[in-house]
Image 1 (tube, rainbow, N blue to C red):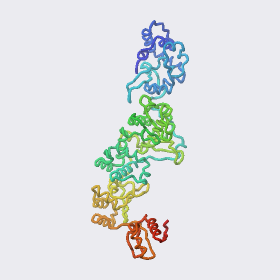
Image 2: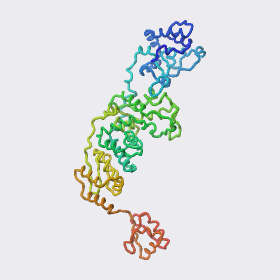
Image 3: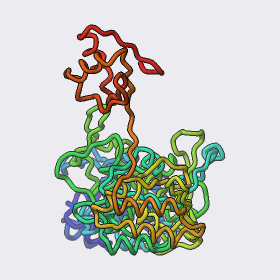
Image 4: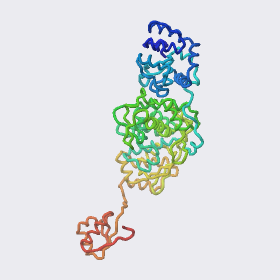
Length: 545
């Protein structure tokens, strides 16, 4: 910290006399230089310092202690938001109004006693102006609590923990699904996205941060193979490491309901690590109030993501209203929302925090750190994960069921040959279809590879009919086709001849007999129009509208 001499430097004689008066020091120096030399010695007296601090009002002592608990310094913008302004005054106005006798804030009380100073520190994330306690004072001011150990917020009430949502490692399964879909150039089925409970854009960012996708959003073969073959704990740790160090995974720009505009930049890595540091002081396993934590960050560390406390240069629009959220007054809509998203989103999806609500379907009201969180925060592999030793089941109808803990590598490979179908919460369903087999063929995969995979990993074997069907498809392609059609029955063959010569004739797929034909599905109304144009009324039966 700067010294008393640094703090007094640059101040005029009038200011130095105000400081001397507050300390009870008689000062008759003829100029500022002489006065500074006298005060430097006098103010370094620990006994006199104790007396001056003892006479401070409670709010000024709180401000001084807050600085002490923050290693003796705090960004000036944060300090003055919390403890009031120090009014800017020239010497004449100051000597006339005497703000030291009529202070408007705790900050002003400390300022005119030289108990604090103001200077720029070149500290991460960037240089900015700080309030500080001079070094000689800092060593004698006893902190009211041990620095950094007091968690922000409070324990959750029983009401806030009424409905619990435990963290899990399911993100590694969802990552496997998305990798398989991307590799097959398939869109994400709505039923699959609903199961994930993670926005597609966010899950995609997890894969990018873990270095599993190339610039074309295709899985990188070797890293993808290693990820899918790793244990569940190792895979989860890889996703966590990627997230912790990723500059491209920008939670602020992923916040629902907000739109970031302009070319300004923020530092998501620094923000992430600052938030993790704030959370690390919460006792592990203790349910903690989310609202109280956010409120406490607002009160004590609001600039956790803002360089130099800048609340005006980031252009963030609230989508619902079209208003730009600027200034400290929008803190809860932006910075508070980011805290909520970090805890209830990425940290929960990565298995770091459990969540709770006060009512089913309501907002998250509480959280607690899981036993996995200490390891994951350091990019290490946590313990206690189930083995992926379950086995798939294949039916004679060509449907393949994958229980949750089947090898992710196996599911990734088999899924590329199949059509995806709606499944249960803890089970994946696929079906062997010509479309899936053709898609795999176009990507260089062979049907024989699918047969080998299924034989190796299905202990109950593959139904012979499935093997036969795959081999037949490999040799001759589709050997049976099902499609929806409509059956047209006419009174005599003359009407049929007339219809086949009309503009609707191309929709007559085939004749079953002179008065009965198969009509292409979806063209029924056109056929009826042509018939009535030719003088024949028709009716629809069997549930047709």
